[in-house]
Length: 134
Image 1 (tube, one colour):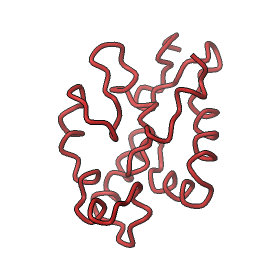
Image 2 (cartoon, rainbow, N blue to C red):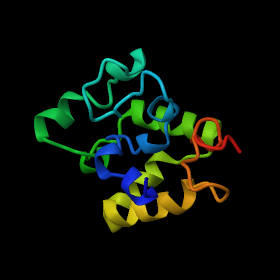
Image 3 (cartoon, rainbow, N blue to C red):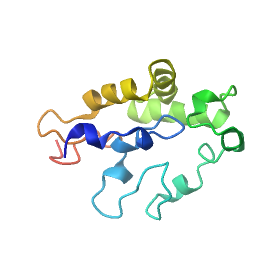
Image 4 (cartoon, rainbow, N blue to C red):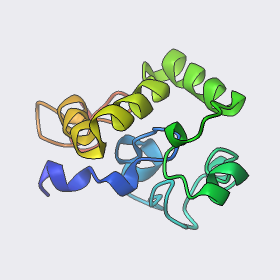
């Protein structure tokens, strides 16, 4: 599969997580469809995500959290955890999408998360390629 077809705007969660690089999305069995899909294979914490199901976002039709004037504590805490655990700045992802659009963001993501050995997708959580495991 062409790497560019693996990265899709529908796979970017409201909080800025790129589900195309998520362990649950990349696993071969019981694959999660991503945060924006309704899927029985989602991890429990994802099905109850207070960021995705934020009333303000739902009421206003927001796609991404940057559209909201209130940067909620939940988003700030998730960003802090992702920076510490995975080196991924979700607020930075949202800023990138806001300023340059989803297509430019995804172009950078393809470069960042493509395995140089086999062309597979590198898992953001494990820092290993989902294909060759390097």
